Every structure is written in structure tokens, then in C-alpha cells.
Length: 201
Image (cartoon, rainbow, N blue to C red; front, side, top):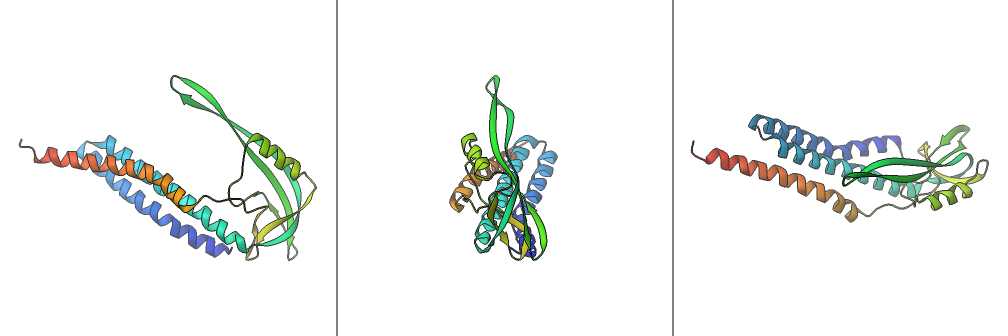
């Protein structure tokens, strides 16, 4: 995938976020002026979050589709480990610990006499349970020669596999929830403000 194509697509995907951000800022300013800032800000944040999630998801989908045209080349694994992340999540009056795992990998390869180091396992998604990540560490041990995918137009872009990508309808469904709630908060606040203004003093 060409670097220019990635940059152009990133700008195109950023338009909804920029527009939503401007609308969110305008909504917040109006809310502060009216003295009814809480519902407006909640709605604006939810709308912006929906636009941001949609942008990231569409970019990921675009990269996945374009990676179908990448070429293969031999590479050598230089690092292969299981990365463990823990975080505290509030559950009612107490906190619980959530643990997630990630396959951390690095490999070097050469294209047209130029050496590169890649660290992307997949363009899309992959199963990241502890057992699955342990299996990946065994499958790609340090020093092993493997075949990777790379973008012939930008050799620094690479991955071991394409993986899977979420469908568009699922992405839209995920972003629809915060967008609907955000719109509802803003609409109800505007509606309430209009009723208040029409009431005789």
C-alpha cells in the first residue's frame, strides 16, 4: 500500500471525526451559555466517540483489503514473546482484575538490498487467549525463517498474516449505540431549552 494512499485515506477517514468534533465543541459552548452543560457535554462526547471508533474501524478495514495485494518474502524472527497486561475494572462496589494477552513479535527482512524490521503479526484481528498466544510463540520461535507479507509500494509496511477483519455492519452497529445516545442527550436538552424559553416569565 502506498504511503501517500495511506495518508490520503487517513485524511478522508478523519473528516467525520473533525466535523463531529466541531459540532461537539459548538454544542458544549451553547450548553455552557445556556447553563445546561451536563447533558450537552455527555451527548457531544458520545457522538465524538462514535465518530472516532468508526474512523479507526474503517481504516483497519481498508488496510486489510489492500493487504490482499501485498507480496511475500522470507524473514527471520528476532523476537517472539507473550505480553501480559492487567488492569483493575470497577464492578459494583469492588474491583476485579482483567488480564489480556498479546503476541509480541519482531522479524527482519530485506527488500531490494534494504533491511527492514517488522513487528506486526496481523493486519486484522486474531485470537488472543493465553493458550492461543502461547501457541503463536511456539509457532514463531526466535531464529526461525518464515514468510511474511509486505507492501511492494512501501516495504516498511509488513505483517506475518492478514488475519480477520470485522464486517462493516458490525462496525456500524457498534458505533450506532453511542451515536444514538449522544444524539438523544443533545436533542432532549435542546427540546427542554425550547420549552423553557417559551414559558411566560
